[in-house]
Image (cartoon, rainbow, N blue to C red):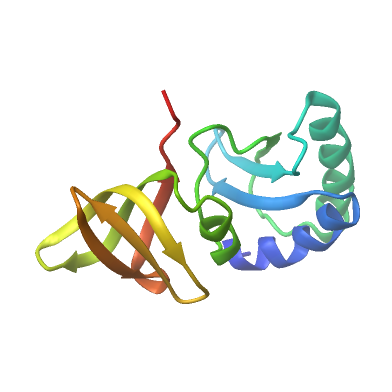
Length: 149
């Protein structure tokens, strides 16, 4: 099962519990496989939240059996340096510093580190050293918040 298919499977039950499925990581094969699910809510996440979501999605994964290899399920908060994967993530954190890596170079560069100035459903604008860069969401390989010192 692909990452996108897992997102579609797990997002509805996580949302019913009152959380956002912020992201997930999947590594399969071998003894060290894992499915790491990142959840969030406006008040923050605690260990009880992680336990409740883990129980819920563990039952779903047992029934649906979407992964054909051994894995460990982990449920966690996104952390201070959280990944930004959805337009809503970028909109929520406008004004904060981000680190963005593109799939392919734009004007000779793939890495951008600066303030997130704007965001809509298709692109973001990042200001790096006083210069504004418009980056299409479809071209972003990864994006993370940079925690404030």
